[in-house]
Every structure is written in C-alpha cells, then in structure tokens.
Length: 519
Ligand code: FAD
Ligand code: SIN
Image 1 (cartoon, rainbow, N blue to C red):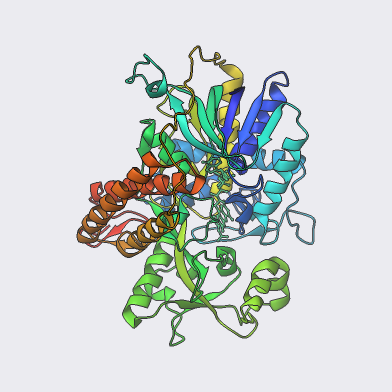
Image 2: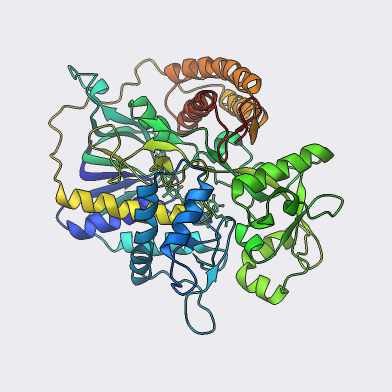
C-alpha cells in the first residue's frame, strides 16, 4: 500500500496543473499521480486549435466571450461559472507562459489570436496546430522538477476506495479514501490511501470507436465515480467534432482543426456546393453542434459517407505556417491541401457532461474532487464552445488548489482491505473482450449518434444489457487487466449516455432526438 496527501488520477492538463500547484504550495506533503499509459499520453497532447482567452481588449471583451459561451451552450450553461472561467483566463494563461509554454506571436510580438466556430472575435491562443503538446510538455517538465511528486506511469486506477469496501463502513455515507491501482507491467494490484483524491481522467471518445480521441479516452474516471455513487450529469451531451479526416478504414480519426475553418476554409458536398450558409448565417463558423448536424443532414440526403473541406483558395504559405501537422498528415494520405479537398466526417470528440462538481471541483462524494474533461462544471451547457476545454481545466485546477490550500483534509482513519482476486483466472479467450468492445462501439455509433430517436435509444439499451451481462461475468471470473476494466467502464458510460438521453425531452445544443420537440 502507498500513502499520499494528494492522489491524482490522470496526467493531462487538469491533473498536472493541479499537481504542480499543490506540490509547490506544500513541499513537505506527498502527491502521487497515477496514469495508465505513458506520462504524456492524454487528450491534452492532441489539442490543436488552442485556448480561448480574452486578450485584445480593444476589439474583444469578457462580455463577448461570456456571450459566445452561453449561446453555444444553448441555455444550459451556469452563467456564474461561465463568467468566473472567462475572467480567470488571462491569469491562468500568464501562469502557463511563466512555466515555459510558448505560444505563437504576430509580427508585432503580441500573441497571435485565431478564431474558431461560435467565437465572435479572434481570441484563440495557440502553438501552431500543436497547442496541447506544448502545454503537456511544459507541465511534465515542471512536474519532474518537484521532488514531492511521484508520477507512476503505466498504472491503471481500477476503482475508488469508498465506505463500500471498508469492513463495517456505513455504505450510505459517501466518502473516498483513495484508489485500487493496477501496475500494468507487473500485474500487481495495490491500494493508494489518500487524504484527497482528484479524478482528472479525461474523456470518453472511445465509447464510439470513431473518435478524435486517443485510446486512453475510455471514461474510466466517470465510471469509477458513478460506481462510487457520485452525481453524474449531462451525459447526453456528447460533442461530435464536425471535421475529422475521413478514412475508409480505421477508427481513430485525425482531427482537422476548427481553426482551419477559422482561417477561411469552406465545407462542400460531393457536388461542390458550399452548404453551410443554407443552415446558419455564421456558415462554417457556426457552433459545432450546428455544423455537425448540418453535415450529418447533407450526408444523409446524398447517401454519402463524408463531405469535403476546401482550403484551395487560402493563402498556402500562411496555412503551412499555422497548420504544419495537418498539412503533412494530409500529404501522407496523398491529399495535397493546395489543390485537393479534404474528405471529412464528424467524429465523437468531447464529453460536455460528467462528474458533477461545484466551483471548487468538489464532487458529491467526500474527499473526492474532479477536474477537466471528466468533470461537469456547468461551463459548457448543451454544447462546448471551441477551445474552452483547456481553459476550463486550468481554471478549475487552480480553484481546487486554492480550496485545498485553505481547507485541510485529515489522513483517513480506516483499514482498507487488500484487493481480493481469489478464484479468478487469466482469461483464456482474450478475444471476447475485443468482440464485446466492437459490439459496444457499433451500437453507440448506430443508435446513439448525432441524431437519436426513442426507438434507437431503446434498442441500444436492449443490446447493451446483453453485453453488460457477458462482461460482468467475465469480470467476476478473470484476473484484472486494463483492457477488461476499460471495457467495463465504457459499458457504464454507454449506460449513462443512453439513460440520460432518454430522460431529455427537449432538443438542446449537441443533443438531437427526432421524437422531441424542436428547439
Ligand atoms: P486528458 O488530457 O485526457 O488526460 C487524462 C489522463 O487520465 C490521461 O493521462 C489518461 O491516461 C489518464 N487516465 C484515464 N483513465 C485512467 C485510469 N483508469 N487510471 C490511470 N490514469 C487514467 N480543447 C481545447 O480547449 N482546445 C483545443 O484546441 C482542443 N483540441 C482538441 C483536439 C483533439 C484531437 C482532442 C482529442 C481534444 C481537443 N480538445 C481541445 C479537448 C481537450 O484537449 C481535452 O478536453 C483536455 O485536454 C482534457 O484534459 P484532461 O486533463 O481533463 O484529460
Ligand atoms: C480544434 O482544434 O478544432 C479542437 C478545438 C476544441 O476541441 O476545442
């Protein structure tokens, strides 16, 4: 068993920022970060467009960014949260720059500001099309300089330890004492006991298979919190990014940043028609929910598998300078952006809902906090405004740090039983895990996609029940592996998305059910 003052699950922007701050503030206290893959593998690493921050006060204002966020959220944002996050933006960015992050500058030496869908002004701070990688690099470097942080890579958090696990514990009292963790290299399972635990475990994109997210995005934190009976909200609001590179084979979808549309690219259907002006006055720069739903409608009308992003009229030198990764990735698929249209299709991208938290990142379980994409703060409402996610993670990491600097949490006075895997065996038919995963992803794509209906959702529940029973049996009988836990977690996530979709009777933002009343 290990012990820490602060346990952190996840090494993306949320977990790393919080860890740096709390470790610097309390050099004599111990922070443990567990992360299931390499230390730098996360959704954060792949963020392209950048971070929305109001810097140019002549043209932009907090009021405009607040308004854009509220409009994108379609009436379901928490306005106080939106105001707080937007106003904190410049300070949190300043801190990141002081820690060594580099962002692109214009000819006058000011930060170069980009534009994306739903933004009325230029306010996206970026590092070419590799913003997330720059943020991740900066934070990992900082973490490695702090001796009171232990970062355990290839360590998988299986479950939170709660009263439910403690002998004689009152199961109705919701308290977290740490987590059970699997060392993926040795196969050992051990306990980390902690005064407080932060879930910073990121998104859920892999539940859909076709996603812009890397393979780590399996919703583990949300599923663990759900099993610990924490409040989970707004799971029906899965955001589909309008423009993932269309590939005939393969599932993980390379993102063509929204900033490319901000740079002036057009969406065209197979006949070459620029269709977005028919759907919204803001055309290609409408918010993501609208652009994805419009693409879906165009594809269904024509029976096509994708539409196109046309960059051929753009200043190519500028394009290559801003988007070198996208330019080269397209070339590797024999798409020359200078003369070819890029085939694109929407793909699951971001979870707007998640573990419900207050302004200090507190969940409804004692000693348990959540931050970043796994949390539901009220900032995004029914649809996240582009580039508000890195911002949200930085602001909430700071809020949680500030709260814990002012409020001490005692070491838990409980005896945590060891993980019990008596009677389990190494699964012989590992292929069953893969089959169940494929079935799950197919049902989410086919029945719980951009456009839903009650009939599809009910059919999804039926299919899911079958997969659930098979996987629970496997879980009970088998020695734990990360892939089995991930599958089980994704089933929990699918259950939450479908269940909360059926509860929503009005279409809002990214949620569209054909059987509901129009917005
Ligand atoms: P992540 O960065 O995903 O980190 C989660 C961490 O938790 C990972 O280290 C993971 O390995 C670990 N983890 C998960 N489960 C476990 C477990 N069971 N045990 C141990 N560790 C675990 N947002 C913007 O604001 N601007 C953008 O330009 C932008 N572009 C994007 C482009 C792409 C392709 C993608 C996928 C997302 C983009 N986003 C963008 C969204 C944004 O990147 C993410 O929402 C944000 O980075 C999430 O940060 P996080 O720290 O919450 O989670
Ligand atoms: C993008 O670059 O299009 C992604 C931005 C985001 O998800 O906020």
